Image 1 (tube, rainbow, N blue to C red):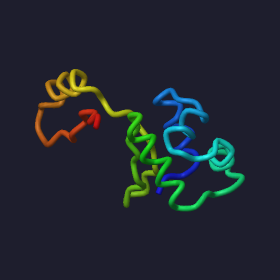
Image 2 (tube, rainbow, N blue to C red):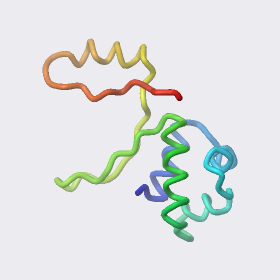
Image 3 (cartoon, rainbow, N blue to C red):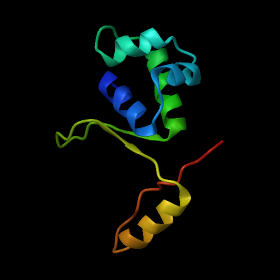
Length: 103
């Protein structure tokens, strides 16, 4: 489950306002603001709605790793960027799928 700071960072990365996220997730904008500012923690259901809406908008949430690396967020890449990265990263090993999947 994402944290308020991840929500705020993901909004910034995908370039949407609190109001736009509120519409996408069907959540009150005041709830999002309180969550991001650590004033109040919404229910798990609301956090899941926010996470899904942000993922749909192009964010990828990174969980806390077992080696102590903290949580994070990054952007998904479009198909053209993913192909270019695959060429650059094709030095060995498996490349994670970074293609943006639109419904």
